[in-house]
Length: 126
Image: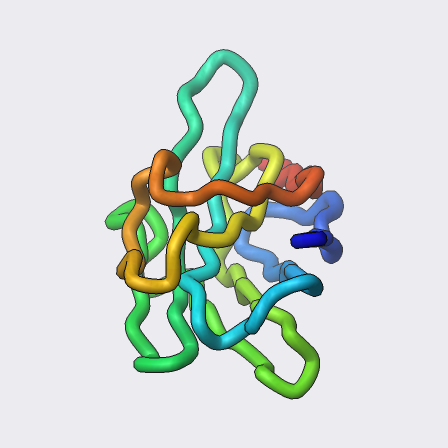
């Protein structure tokens, strides 16, 4: 059974940092793209970042470039999202997800991803 579990969310002041973790199981970790998405109340889901370990490809939304960094630890089957210089507009529930197929490249399109975690809340106060 494919499972993804997010952790690391919380409350932080603007300008602060958080590191989210996505621990996975039930599939060959490095073969699939793993993405981070977020959804704020009343807004559409947004693709934030993605990594595919087997070729090192990554994706970042323009809104987070230069502030967020994605990485993976194949030994722990875990993807991390380091979030720096956080802004109030980064407040959202953050989800990690696995691509539907191994040949899917990294992107911000939610439809490319078929298995999702339960989400972790990130709140940035001004």
